[in-house]
Structure formats: C-alpha cells, structure tokens
Image (cartoon, rainbow, N blue to C red; front, side, top):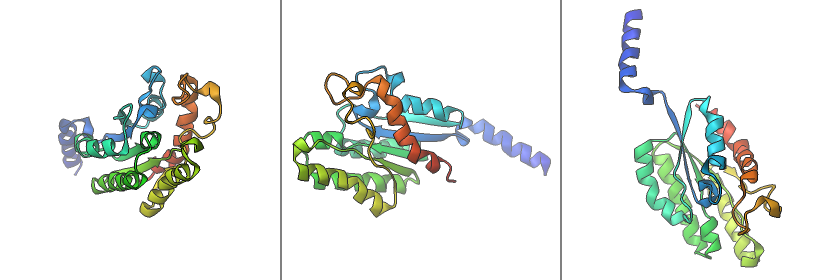
Length: 202
C-alpha cells in the first residue's frame, strides 16, 4: 500500500505542479489594471502577495476601458486557458460612465456568472457606484444591478470597490476617477473582507 501511494504521488508530480495549484482570475477594468500607477502597487498585486503563502496564484486579466460586454467576450477563453477556481468580476464602471444600457449590463453580468459556474469556478462580484450627476435614477439603477445579480445567483458581493475613499479627493489621481497608489490598500481590504471566507470553502 505504501509503495502504491508513493507511486501515485510520483506520477502526479510528473504531471507538474499544476495538479495542486489553485488559480484566482480577476476580470476587471482600469481600477483593477492599476491605471496611472505602478502595476505592482495596485490592489490586485497586493492581493497576489497576500495569497502567495496560501499557494494561490493570480491571473490579472483586467484591461483599462473594459466593459461588461468586453469581459463577456473574453471570459470563455480565459476560463479555458487558466481553469480558475475563483473569478473576481470587477466590471461595470465603464458601462456607467459611458451611459450604456443598464439592461444590457445586467444581462452581461448574468452571462459572466453563468460562464463561471458552468466552468466550476466560484464567482465573486465586485460592485461599483457612479455619481448622481449621471442622473439619480440612472445611478441608483446602476448600483442596484450588482445586488440583483448577486441575489439571483446567491453570490458573494463586494458592495462597493471604492468604499471609504470615494469622497476623499487625495486618494484619486488628477482625473478624479482613478485611485492613487496610496488608495490601493483600501481597495484590497474592501475585497478581502468578502473574499477571505470564500477562499476557505472546499
């Protein structure tokens, strides 16, 4: 029995370390891509440092300017290529800033979540809000989409990525949209509060 077990372990080792690896995929926009700062200072890189000791690797597939539609078109290939156990969906800000259809945005989120679940990946939805100057009704409906999708699919939700810093100007670059390097730890903690329990699930 002992020799059989050793043999199995040797075979698995020959397949590569990926047998035991766990991957977390981040699909986001400029807020997750580290726009305007050193990428290594971004919240995703800070998360990578925190998860390294847990044996969890991170693939940051975030692209500046990405929309929910763009993320939806890219996700199937990403799921196939990396076979992640967890997927952080951090999209929607550009849909809102461009005044795109909220109905289409919700549909895109629904499909993103379904793709993850069909691939046996655990999705975590990261919420955003937009200023009322886009119209109070539009802004409210925009933020409600995250709650609706999360409740429908029983997902863990980060209510607002920029919670705690959204109204503090010094935490934003000159464009008033993208957080500075000093703000990234706040973003990480907002995500970590919801992500940590999820990582402990079998």
